[in-house]
Image (cartoon, rainbow, N blue to C red; front, side):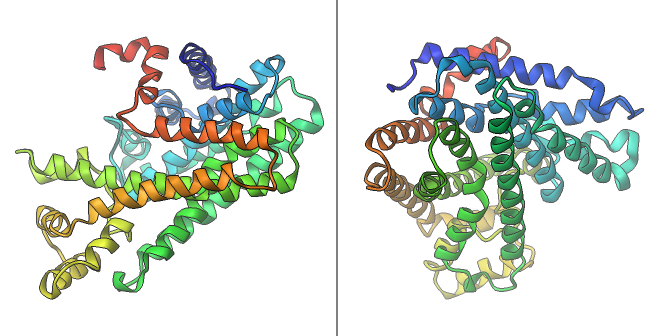
Length: 378
């Protein structure tokens, strides 16, 4: 089927936002919790501004694969499930990363310091994230789809949840290696494949299952999408680095700057493609300084940024992102094992996902039309 119009995308986003708002307003899941801030801290992850990449990618793929409009309400329910799980994972990520803000608002473990104290706020937030994670499959289970299909979708959904968690563990294991010079770019990309591909490709798998494609097709589609997901992760790392550099270039004190830009993996000394590219390009003395920082030595972040900037590592990442996107497009458009109509449909969805992830794209700004409360900030 042809790609949906902008008006259709806006309608889908509004329906999705309304469904998430209803879930956020449902206090049955936290009615045994005496502290109301727990509910607020958890559900903030469902209602704060987001382009809804996971939910919208599912809706787009379902449309292009020809899933009938008679399932429209069920499709919105599935998209909501993906976004609720996304909220739970982000909440847990913020605890792991020690972030104090997300999107300009306090993270859950930071917001809960007042009622729980510094020592137990993270534990309370962790459990609040568990509530969201437990809620996530409910929209699928409550949908109007036939029972066997609901069960199959939940099986795929939950299996992917486990894969995402396992991938995050591997990322943490990679980050604690003493010598970042032993980590290759290929290994970092392999970690991204195991961490981010199950996360995002679950949206496509659910749409493909609804379209009646078999297990073999689902596997091939997921494999074709791995470079796309790797590109998104490299793009995310580069964006965090760019934002960190921008904030540190202001006159704000370092502590405040890090609070504003604490999505940067560089501040956490993570092994990213950007850092690996810089390490391979630095002369001996600067190479030692960046290695020392990555293994725990205190070095002012502006100094670290200057070291990386001098290498052209950011340009390398930009080239790599383009190459991964091209590879993923070639994978999906030329796979002889997939029906031509499926290849054409998912090629269109791949293009939509890339555009949605690109903050400079008109597609990425469409969510503002579904969120009138954000128009003033646009």
